Amino acid sequence: MLLTALLPNPSCTSSMIIKHHIPFMVSSCSHLYQYAKISKKHLIRDINLLHAMGYLPFQVLDSVPVVGNRVFYLALIKWDDKAVPQRLTSMLKGIVSSNNIIYTSAVKRLEKQGLKSVQLAYNLGIKAKKPFVWVYVNQKIRPEKLYVWETGHQHFVFKSLVNTGIMDTTVFGDFYIYRRMKATEMRGYFPGSHQYYDDPDVPWVNYFYKGEAIHGYYRYVYGFPQSAGCVELPIHKAKALYPLLYRGALVSVSENRY
Image 1 (cartoon, rainbow, N blue to C red):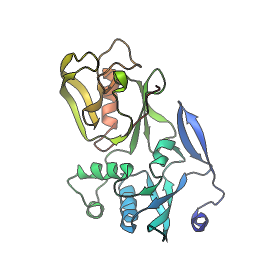
Image 2: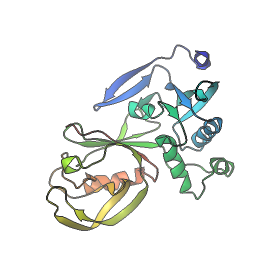
Image 3: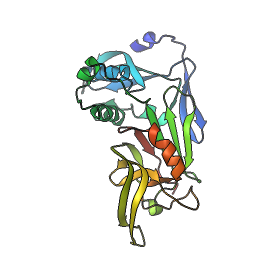
Image 4: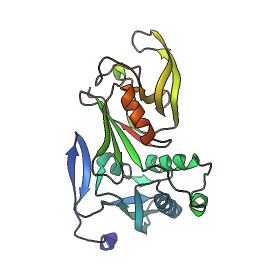
């Protein structure tokens, strides 16, 4: 393949290891490399600008056009780290467009600065105020846990027991945090019993899908489905997590074990 010769060290190999039941792709070199199909040339430019500003944990080293039923660019991706969660690398499978979740999350984070143009933000010298993070909620294995991976580290920077929703009510998939509040009121009807609840002061809230959020909540025990759909942490843990996150942070929720 033409791009293979562009690797800084063509002998670089990658393998998979498991950390806390979570697959990681690990390179034998100082950075992980990956091939990806990118839909538009300008998207490659924006990816590299977002990387330069600290909004993405990877860049495009080079690319070649591929002409067929659909024109795309075969790109060589260089991650900032040598150990990257496999769930993140899988977000660059298929043909990457502007609707790609990891790209969209970076743009949404940038929009907090009041700018929608990636090029303009770069020209103005905008820089991300926090490192890129990925949040993973593992509800396949008991006790349920939440992990945070941050670029620049070969390990998780945060871990906590959590509670997800009863009756499989916590959505699974890949999302980004779209709203954050230090406290808010939550109301609704509890699944199954349809009992009405009204919690006036839920702390350290990060909404990632409709009314589902990662937040603090007092329970006697954690690690098992107990919520109405949200991801609940002990309050002191939720407080420690809150400053690590930002609007646009990626959140992945595993499928339920059942």
